[in-house]
Amino acid sequence: MANKALAKRQRMTIRQEPSQKAPRNPFALAAKQRAAGPHQPAKLSQRPGKKQLLNLLLQSSKDD
Image 1: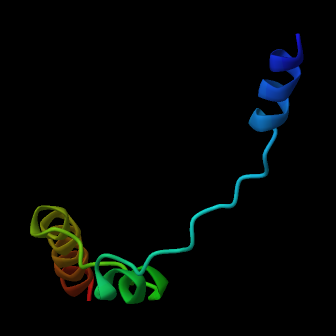
Image 2: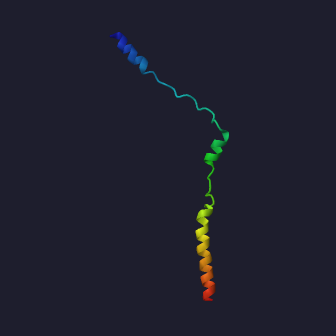
């Protein structure tokens, strides 16, 4: 019976967390902290908007 109590005490040892390692990629930390801005919309999404703007300009020039 004494062996069971001893085994419990051995399992209850305090474990220390391993120290922090250096980051694998030194540029990853800088990229993660940097706020990235939005990219330009795709050309496929720009074309309909430009076409609508052109139609509006043509209609306004016809009205004048």
